[in-house]
Image (tube, helix red, strand yellow):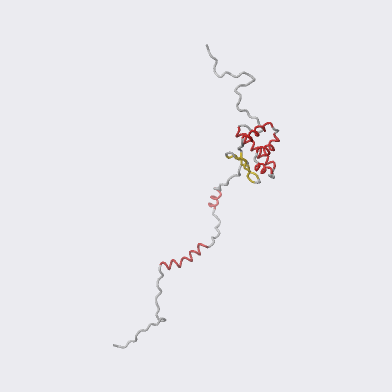
Length: 182
């Protein structure tokens, strides 16, 4: 046999081919780039084209209208004011209803103060008395009186007939049926 030198291991001389990355390593390498792209601020949109502008103007968004000045829901009167919403209960106990019905004889300009002083609960009366717009407070009081009257079938300050008269007092009523023939 011939003498051949025995190979010795030398780490600096051994060169290994780079191994192909595994699918997991490829995924791990792409995660930072994906996260960075997701966290980027969106760029400003470009000017819309003419059809897009027409579509935007053709279908306006539904805007709710203003609230009504007065609204009755079940037994509450809701009044919208510049100072906020005023809610008054339209239900009255019997003693208050009797006072309400006796107010029919009052002079119309005294009705609002009578309602505030005699009929409304103290908290509601104070809320109305402390409003900056006294005319609006009086209008709320008169609307409240009208709505309470409507619940009773009459309104404060107005006389209302319960039924129409069936006969006129000026002339005899026309016969309902044809005269009997004999």
